[in-house]
Length: 126
Ligand code: HEC
Image (cartoon, rainbow, N blue to C red; front, top):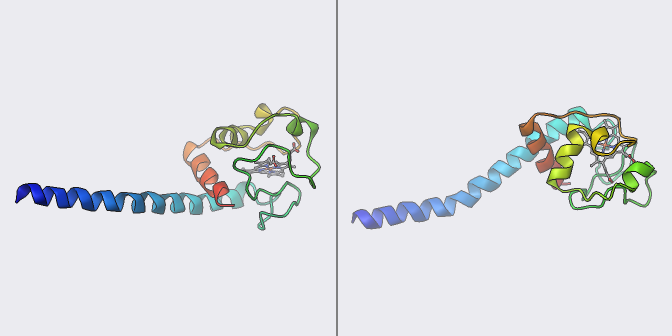
């Protein structure tokens, strides 16, 4: 009896875990959209597929830096050889001028690890 109860509890929590994990990803992305609105939106459009002062960020996670055809990037970013993954995005929002000296993007400094997590979760949804 005891064993089967335990088995039920284990099964139930195994089923619940993925749900909880994906809900928290969504929550992070929601928080990230707030961080984005405060720090990035002025130059990167609400419509993430549009180039405005900054390049479109649609699909930026996994993209090669400086690779959109219709945006006038700095030579520095174009030549950086970076592919935007989580680590690189973290370094970029922490201190973009340190990661790519000579970039045209104004200095940003998001040093809070949780804010970086939120922002990256949000960028993944674009
Ligand atoms: C003052 C305007 C401005 C702000 C604020 C700004 N950006 Fe940018 N962003 C730019 C410009 C301009 C570029 C192109 C840089 C270059 O060519 O060197 C850029 C480039 C980028 C890139 C590289 C895209 C690519 O196609 O390689 C990413 C990623 C990015 N910004 C993310 C962000 C995030 C996240 C924030 C907020 C924390 C932010 N930016 C805030 C203007 C801005």
